[in-house]
Image (tube, rainbow, N blue to C red; front, side):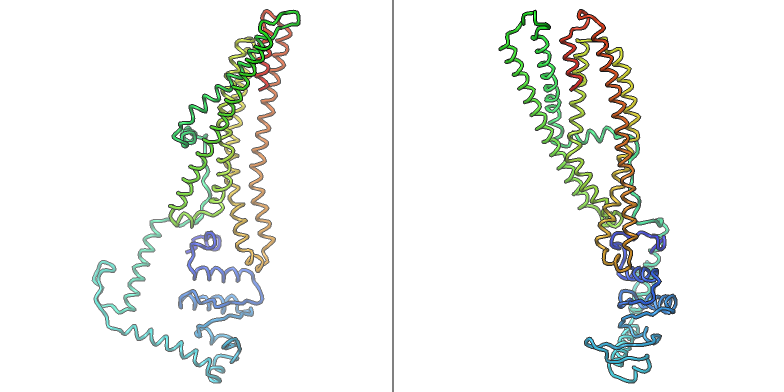
Length: 468
């Protein structure tokens, strides 16, 4: 039943234990306390006669023989060994003393013993009932069996089946450690996410709005650089009214493109998150009972709360924000190729360094993110179990142990969280250092070369895109 003894994880609220097994676990917990006085409220009610007799002999007459034990029971076969018996009727003590003394001194206890003996007699009479033929239990001719023998035969079949199951299924902990993915996130995961909402029909419109936003921003900056005179002595090639109308039109178009991008992102993200949640909810409903026996509620709550919140709020913004950054990067490279292509001399090695940093960072950050998610579930699980068993915890004076356990779980959760934030700062510092290097090189490049090589207006456009 318990392959790892007292270290066996019995599941949340003892869900995989029967009533008798729960009662035996409770008795074992009481024995571990090594108290001076034990109060046992009908400890043999949920166990069979053989198990009850074993518990009485090994626990009450064995391990607790030097302790004071007060136990309540309706099973009179355990009373002869008691030092003092109190017979209760309608909330009052009617008799007290040893077994033989009260057996002859009153009627209440005699009635209880008589009822017990009558029950035993009825069981014995059932054993003498007529027998009948049965041959379909084990697949062989068993002859004539009484009810009692039939019950024994069925138990033997169950025992043989149980032994067979034990040889096929290896013993192990019911609750296993949570599985953790390894390696990079596959393309199928990304493809599943972007095609969940409306079969991916919104993806082309999202990409179009992203591209349109960047193109209109570049066009507005390009228009200002083209129409604005380089110095005060030069005449403007375009009138102020035309300049403002075109610029405002491009800005309004860029604003509407940004609005459309935002609306489509919200719609796609909301629809995807809703469908993924419904699929998860349906999986929980259709899961077999063994899943809930072996899966702590903390893991389920972690999936339905923290992980689902990430899907609702973060992933959509990160996914389409990444797409926007890629389009903007291509636009910046296009402007640089027109304004100052010489910058590519330093830009190419810097981009190679950025890619190397990104790959170096991703290998650790990915594992840290997975560890953070796995370490969060035990915190939720321990919190819910503590609330449910707060009465038992206070009864056994285990508040300090559970508080210490809670702090240990929080520390285990905080460690990968801290390391993840530290890794992000590590990457940001090096990327900022590289960007400052590019900016310093561009400033030196701007003041060193004549205007015939580098157009100041186009360089201003590139600098604006660099800041964006």
